[in-house]
Amino acid sequence: MHAASRALPKRPTFTSAAATDPVSSLAVYAARCERDRAGDHSRVSAKPQELVPRRARLPAQLGSVLTCSGPATCVGSGRSHAEMTDAGFGGSVRILRMRRRWEGPVDFAAEGLLDGCEGDAREARIALLEQLFADGASLDEVRRAIAEDRLVTLRVERVMTGEGRYTQRQLAELAQVPLNVLLDFRHALGLARPDPDDPAFTDHDLEAARFLGRLLGAGLPHDELLDVSRVLGRGLSRGADAIRGLLGRRFVATAADEWELALLNTQAADQLLPLTGPLLQYILRLHLIDQVRSDVAGISDMLAAGRMPGSRRVVVCFADLVGFTELGQRLNVEDVGALATRLEEMTSAVVEPPVRLIKTIGDAVMLVSNEAEPIVDTALRLVASARGAGGEFPSLRAGIACGIAVNRAGDWYGPPVNLASRITAVAPAHAVVATTEVRDAARGRRWRPTGKVRLKGITGEVALFQAS
Image (cartoon, rainbow, N blue to C red):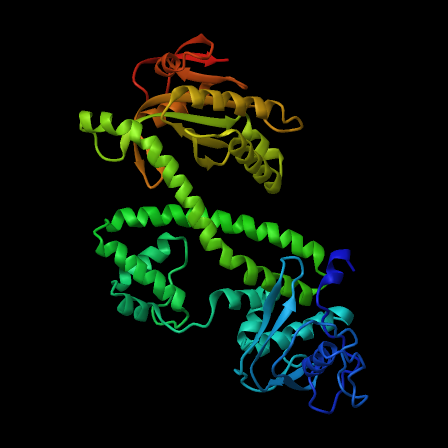
């Protein structure tokens, strides 16, 4: 077993598969834990046919137990929870939340829930199934989770979502928000549209629906709130995917079997999930402060010129990988994705305010700043970083333009956006190329003219200069 996994609470190991007395493995587990806490470490075994966990060393207290007629047939008889010693997150964590919600005995083997599991893997599956059914999972839920290869995450899904109490229709009525508006906002967040009469939603969903109602009641435009929801949905989806990948890789390397992997997932959700709200609020506040400060410089000009809200003078930069299309034809999908990820990582490493990374578009990144010189410096550092990456990492090139653009839902639109994109397409590898206006605004850099060019969709010739 992996060294790190030895610190985990051990799952029960069964010595008999044909027990006749209704004694659960978890019942014996609980008894042993009680005796351990009292200082009595003798073996808990009244009858040789009972299911006796050989490694029942869990520092926990189970308030009530399950009764089983064997390792594959269990029925619940009470309510309890256990506090297990943490496996790497610090402190104690609530792991088992057993609720009386059984529909009757479940024969794991007869229901096909143990198919393909042998030896230790079978024992681990049995222990996990007992916990899932003790938590109140239905047979259909468990079957679905096995079919979708997500049995080890089912417990954490249940911990995170809680018990469904409301339909979307009820949420809309209680929050005084039109049902179609509530469904639109859920869809804008990147989530599926549910059946309005499916009672799958919790008090957290009701709180969010009421918050939406307050925003609408404050007079914020419906369409613009939808735009913000789309931006938040995209960003938080990527953040959740990154966190899931980080923890998933660590847990798979640490856990010895399904039971331990499910335990680690549940511990992570129990300890880390409550921290995410304050952390996200803190990060959002910092970004809002930074952007408000950046916007102040352009407010007077915007008011004097009578420009529309959201529009201002900005400097836009695109940087893309040279020859990415050809690379995509000879590399597998994973390697192509890795190149795009590496580009985003490189960009994040060199970007500092007032420059902002707006988005990644496959093989390209888009940057925006309210000042020319910082974005030129950032582009030069990014190109140099790609050049020094070595291996098969492609060359990078960048194009920069400035002008009046409009911000909508976190993205930018307007002439400088189109112009910067067109300049990037004609820039040489390893080069940062910009317009006359950018050159004049970034006098701290050295520039050399590269000539005038005609660009698709741009009227007239454009004089370009390469920065160094």
